[in-house]
Length: 332
Ligand SMILES: NC(=O)c1ccc[n+]([C@@H]2O[C@H](COP(=O)([O-])OP(=O)(O)OC[C@H]3O[C@@H](n4cnc5c(N)ncnc54)[C@H](O)[C@@H]3O)[C@@H](O)[C@H]2O)c1
Image 1 (tube, rainbow, N blue to C red):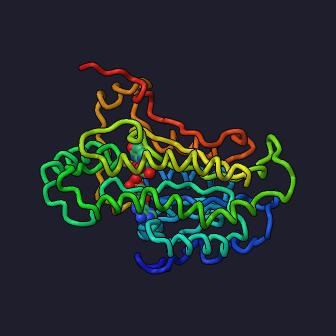
Image 2: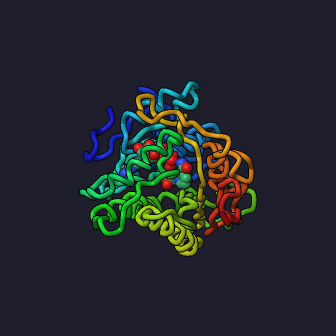
């Protein structure tokens, strides 16, 4: 059973017996499938990424604060091969102890290696502390909800004068500090997934391991009163190039994907109150590519960035995936 929120993370596997578990080698082997952790991997873009990596043969640890969503995601795995290669570990990424438990649980399940970490978990609507004056703004955000299931399309507005420090810090803890902590505690295993001593080789999946951080186009542009969310997404960009330079010699590549508007309404847990998105022709046509994004627009790129045989010469970069919206000039 999954652990309750706030308690140490406990692995929950898709099957009673984790056939992939305990493959346990101390170094990378081309015969053992690579291991990836996806935070916030049970719903939304993270769910699309977890599914994509499983489909590509990875062993995937889905780390999410929402145990119900984790169980729900495991039920979506129709193939035994996927179920055997997937483990859910309930994790609040804002808690250092739970990140340590996540890394320990991953190693217990799949051996002494981690090939890829996807830092996807984030909040766009912190609830900590009382920001009582946000009610008026919340009504506009709620209106957006009926149109788009994803919070990033309408992060909670926090009027500056009533924004509490606790709320600001909650955004930082979930969206930024977690990325630092996962890199810190995951690094020993990211390093161990590579062949000892041999120089990096073009085309070899084992030449590099990868961290992929999910930021947002809101790191680059803003709506009013979204300072906490935008700040955290900008910090993720900076943390990406900083880690990339620091960890290059360890053969760990670190890249960032910044989504624009991605409709995640079909990627939520079954019981979720989020309604299916009702997207208008205008929603789609305002994008230069003519449509709102979907989960696979992001997950395909994440898979590419995780795979050192394909993206081994790419590190420290930010990839904007927004249907061209941030390149569109608007004077109205
Ligand atoms: N959907 C978009 O339009 C969009 C656009 C730009 C960026 N993003 C980014 O993409 C990522 C995913 O967004 P989404 O729209 O799929 O969100 P979502 O809300 O659909 O999914 C987020 C997942 O993260 C989990 N989560 C939340 N807090 C957590 C915590 N403390 N610890 C562990 N897990 C936690 C949730 O339970 C959920 O399963 C986020 O980083 C978000 O900022 C999304």
